[in-house]
Amino acid sequence: MNAPAPEPRVETRDVDPELAKEWLGQNIRNRPVKWRKVDQYARDIAAGRWQLTGDAIRFDTTGKLIDGQNRLHAVIQAAAPIRTFVMWNLDPDAQDAMDSGAARTAGDVLTMTGVPNGQAVAAAARIAMALEVGNKTNGVRLTNTEVQRWVLDNLDITEALDILSRRDARLIPLPPAVRLFCTFRLARIDREQAVEFFTQLATGVGLTDNSPILALRRRLGGASYGAARKTSADEQIAAVFRTWNAWREGRPLARVLTTNRAGATTIPDPI
Image (cartoon, rainbow, N blue to C red; front, side, top):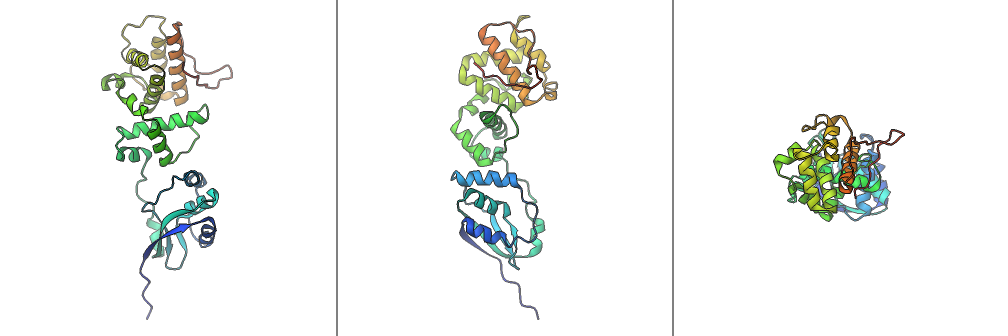
């Protein structure tokens, strides 16, 4: 008669790099390591942002590691310990059902902490954070914790939601995340002028033939951002900032260019 399988048990452990290496030695059958995710986790650990959650490092009844390899690699990479739940004695077949639910997004986290329109704010925050380290809006992988911390440190991005009425906001020919980021960035320079700029961009009322804002409306495709979707976020932001600069300086603008002579998109600093 076979002995009954041991009951699953859970404990809380401090896992340092040495223990992480030992446990990774029991990583016999697992998915490929997600090194970008490891990098994200390691940044949170090194910065002291790692939190104890219900996510456990899991082992089956044979002692094999079946969940947690990315976190363990991150502990080693960060050269710092974490406190985590550890679950032992799971059925080996349980691995097949892990991580099958919908992943929680940064927008979900912000919404749960009371930030209005969390998904749009998170998307705009990612744009802002990417541009802080370069001149492109993509290529930077960020953790939910990094996005949440940035938003809490820059809460005026949520105030940008209120600069325009919902009706006018829908008329601005830009995707919501780009629109919110641009509004946030320009309102930091001059809130009253940002309101005027985006109101004219939304309605087109009172624009003269040589108005930079009229040129931007034509560039983006009028009162629908369907045409704007054919351009990248970098091009859209570059167009807005170039228009803003011309408008603030009182310069006429017949056409909004977003690339240099080499054909590369460059995002200017708004003034």
